[in-house]
Amino acid sequence: MKIMFKKQGISPAVTEGGTPRVHFTGLSAGYPGRTVLHQLHADIPALAITALVGPNGSGKSTLLGVLAGVIRPTSGELRHLGNRPPAFVPQRGAVGDALPLTVRQTVEMGRWGERGPWRRLTRQDHTTVDRTMERLGITDLATRQLGELSGGQRQRALIAQGLAQESDLLLLDEPTTGLDPEARDRIASLLAELVADGVTVVQATHDLEAARSADTCLLLSDGRLAGQGDPEQLLSSSTLSQI
Ligand code: ADP
Image (cartoon, rainbow, N blue to C red; front, side, top):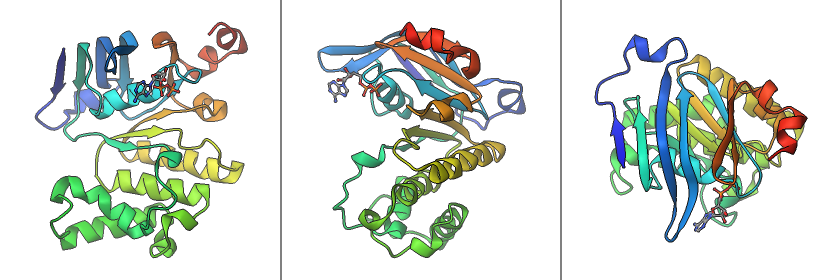
């Protein structure tokens, strides 16, 4: 099993023309005593939105965990063609309601990877946090507790935490599930803007509308790749009925 990070910056050849940000081949992974993902081969294109789609339990979150570096593959090769570690935005439900964290503290945690939790953030870190909150339209919510927010506001705080890491690869687990249509649209536009600004986005989603508006799609079924490519074609009712 090999995991490789490219050491230098991304060359123009890598960022243009559908070249991959992540490439994996023969990738298997899972949990102790249980293989969940079986021999996956795919590219995640740079500067695009990739949707991970599939029934519950098909391995979407596990694949995100592997891309994030949280779960180690048991075999195969995973190659990151970027120069920053990925930023992982977990499902909203995985972040406890009762956590006594303000929105600002949540976003500041995105800087811990650089500073460590016990080191003071620098002036530059605070500027990054301010800019990110502004970008996500949550500056006014800075002192509110995470548990008091609406689903859409909380999702924006979590995305801000990911963005504050200043990564070029944002991995999101079900960012729009359970949100009202207005909040969903807001997240969708935001993700499109991030891509225009140089970020590669991968989102696991149950939201067919979000999946259809992605640039490309990986369809998982029982831990295997059931298809990849254009979401409109892949997510036709005839394909979906087969998985
Ligand atoms: P999805 O995101 O598509 O719903 P998951 O990746 O969460 O799928 O789960 C894939 C399979 O892995 C499921 O059968 C699930 O029960 C199992 N699984 C998920 N997390 C764990 C874990 N921490 N330990 C053991 N099995 C797990």
